[in-house]
Length: 248
Image (cartoon, rainbow, N blue to C red):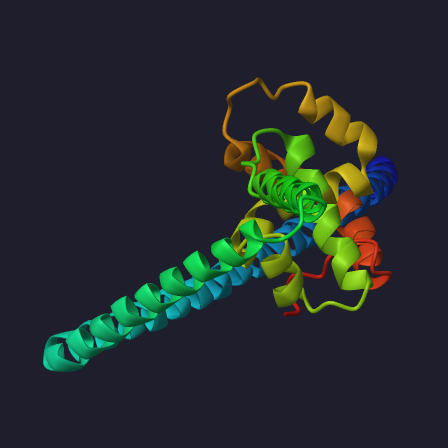
């Protein structure tokens, strides 16, 4: 009788322990599955970003190749037809001499005009000079090199506004005098700043003057690929609050 009683008690203890182990193991397994899913999503985003970089580099290569072919063709034409080049040069010289002669006669004609027209001509010349100076200054600003994350974000949003205004991405890049590859590489800076301002602010504090924008962009990319930011960035792109660079 006693052995049977102890056997029954031992069996109940084993069942109780198995039930306890099962109840503990289920949440642990679910956590592991969630982590695995997160890693898969992060890897997918990394692959997508690398594909975008590869496409951009391919476009740049094709563009440079076409420019090189054009330059070689022009060089071959110049070598193969020196007579034409000489004729063109002679025509240019003749045209220049004609223009100089025309300018001299024009100067003579202007000097014979009344004294009232002279101040007006000088004023017009000054206005034209001031306008050209202002235009060259504006171009110089557009070509300014990006040195800080703020510069990169400002340029990104300038492209974004042009696209919202009806320009294609290629037209917007050309208008801002920047290639697509540069926008793709530095896009994570603006994306993180828009999707998670607090996290960007903390990361920005680590950026020192003179450091590489590229390295800072890589740090932002790592944060953009975190699950909590991936969904937000995707939604912002769908609502046109961010550039969907994967679409040309």
